[in-house]
Amino acid sequence: MRTRVLLGMLAVWAMASAVWGADADRIQPWTGNAHYWQFKGKPVLLLGGSVEDNLFQIPGLAEHLDTLASCGGNYVRCTMSCRDDGNVWPFAKKGDTYDLEQFAPEFWRRFEVFLSETARRDIIVQIEVWATFDYYRDIWDRNPFNPKNNRNYDAKDSGLPLEVKTHPTRTENDFFRSAPGAKDLKVVRRYQERFVEKMLSISLPHAHVLYCMDNETSVTPTWGAYWADFIRAKAKAAGKRVEVTEMWDKWDLAHPQHNGTFDHPETYSFVDISQNNHNKRQVHYDNMQKQRRRVAKAVRPMNNVKVYGADGGRFGETRDGIERFWRNVFGGCASTRFHRPDSGIGLSARAQRMIRSARNVTDAFTVFACEPRPDLLAERAENEAYCLAQPGKQVAVYFPRGGEVTLDASATKGPALALRWYDIDTGQWRPAKTLGGGKTVRLKAPGGGQWAAVIVAGEGE
Image 1 (cartoon, rainbow, N blue to C red):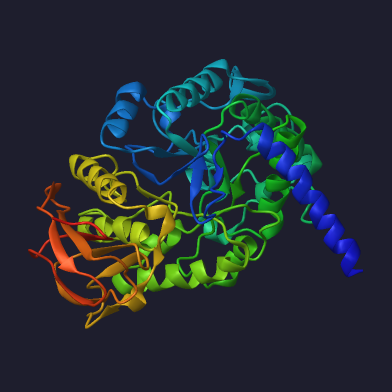
Image 2: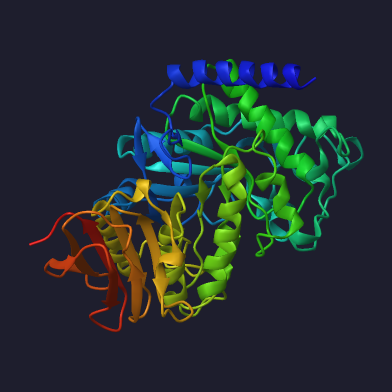
């Protein structure tokens, strides 16, 4: 039995390798360290922020993407959402109702332009196929999939409600139970599949796209797994490799809801932990590290497509959001992106400074060779400092609010250590300083704001 299983796994790996080899430039886990992504054959850290989630629906798209790229950003979110003013729905409208057999050219034109513009700038796109909130409350009331809004099925044929007054966490719309193994709503699923097939006909030729099944879902794992399998099968038929995940609603990453992704690497090739970004300070970091240890059994990138926190918002202050953004970097995550205003700071001037600073800091050492090493820091208060390290070669330490800690540098080889301080808030490097090698180092941030210390062995002045 074990031999048959092993042979089956080897066959899967062989087929996957053939696809990967033919499509090596696509976004995929880095072969050198699968905690991170690679794109066009090189490891890449994904940093981002944007004014909206469904960017393909906004005016001034090219200028917005130029702004992101100019500060070192390379990562955006794309919900397939239609709920905002000025948005168009994916299906053609005939009089007062939609025809699910016909697509709206303008919706798909916008989507195609968006993917072309992001590809031109090497900006990675994380699509959320089902924009959860579009299927509840007032948005469901005008959604083409609602039986009262289309000419293709009624409430009886489809099994769908005409109104859903509750929050998505109540999961009272059977739209999300159409899959086999749930309510198997074939009439509805036919049009859901047509929508996804149309999306894939545009997105699959592009190498810079990641796929997330939902936004903050609370439905059963059956739904997401069905669409993950569907998308991967369509990609395979087209000779493409794609990376897929699911995004759950619960803020606690240890909640059983998240088992659907963490415990199923055969279905989901990366995990999105965005909801952890509701948590603050040390709890935020510790939750992340527990899950990083969990994926060590089948290492995959951990993405953060939404970082919450903005003054006047519901999810903490701007300072909370900025610290979360940086802790994700120093927690060994593959991506971090500021959420839209007012739940996050979007691509504001301050967000641009943080993205630029994060790029400057991580370009100063080989971040992809490092791992989170909080054990190397001593005399540290809660939330005082966070460490990434490749012992013996390089260390980087992030101070959210100033501070002073002791760094264990005993594994470092070479005659000297080169220490450089980076003022995150102003975007300025301090002059390099030479330290003695192979001993404990006392690190005191030069000021009370955000600082990064980058220490490299065998260099210095």
